[in-house]
Figure 1 (tube, rainbow, N blue to C red):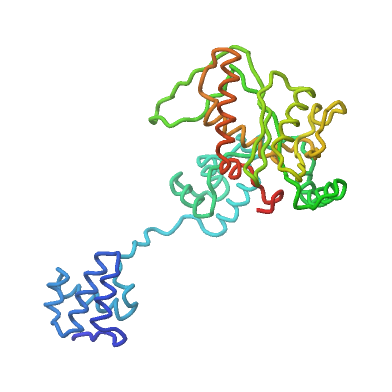
Figure 2 (figure 1 turned 120 degrees about the vertical axis):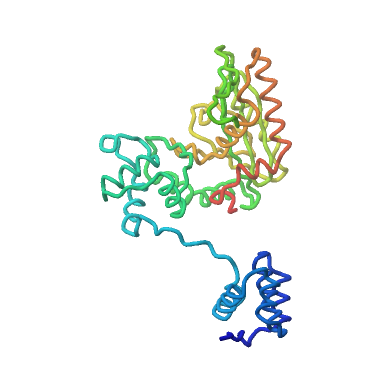
Length: 352
C-alpha cells in the first residue's frame, strides 16, 4: 500500500532545501520526494534517486517521521561504551588527585597506567585507544604542567591579586595623580649563555633530531620590562646582575613612560630589586611580587617565547655574539607590540 507524504511540505520547499543542503545524498533524496509531491510514481522517484522502489518507500517513512533531517545518513551507534558513570566518576577523581608514587609506582598518569588502574579497581579491560577517547570526551587533554615553587605560601597569589587595586590606589594618592595615569609594568632578568637550550622541533617519527650544543661558559643578562596594555617594552643587555645594573634598567624604563604618567613596576624580591642603594626614578614605584610566585610575572613567558623562537638551538661564538643575538631578539620583540600584549595581558592586573 502506498504511503502518503506529510502535508506540511510541498515540492517547492523540498527543492529549496535540496539546493541549500550540504549533504549530496540528502539532496538527492529530497529531489526524489519532491517529484512524488508533483505526482510522479514511485518508480519514477526511484529512477531519480538511482535506488529501488523499496528504498524510496523507506525514505518516505523516515521523512514523515523526522522531516528533512530524517534523510541524512547517520553514524551507526557502534558498540556501547565499556565505561559507565561509576567508572567515569572514579576515573575523574584519580586523575584530579594524581598518582601516589609509593603506591602507584609513577609520578604522572599515562594512558597505560590508567588502564591498569581500571583493571585493578574494577576488573575491567579497556584498550588504550578506547580510554583515550573517553578521557577526551570528559574534557581531559595531555597538557604541560605549569611550574609552581614547592615552598610557595598557600593563597599568596590570590591574596596579591585581590590587594593589587588597593595598592595602586595608594600609589596614586601618594603621587597625587589619577588612578588611570598609572601604567602597570612587569620586569625580570634572563641569563643567556653559550650553554644554550635545545627546544622541541618537528621531525619524522622514530627519529631524534640534532641541534648544536656548546659547553663554553660565556653569558650575559637581558634586563627586560613590558607594559602589556600599551604594548611597550624597555630592555638592556648587561654583563652582570646586580644593583648597579638594575639602576640602569630602571632609568631605561623611566624614559619609556609617557609624560604625566607613573609606573607601578611589578617584579620579584631579588636582592638587587629591593636594595637601598637602588636608584629609583621619581616616575616609578616598585611593587614587589610575593616570594616564590614567578607565575605572576608574564616576563617569564616572554623569556620562554624568545628562547623557543629566537635564542635556542644555536651555538654562540663568543660573548659579543651572545650580546648581538640578545639585542636582535629583544628589538624584534619591541617591534611587535601585539606580541607583548598577547603574552603579557592578565585579567587580574589590567582588567582584560
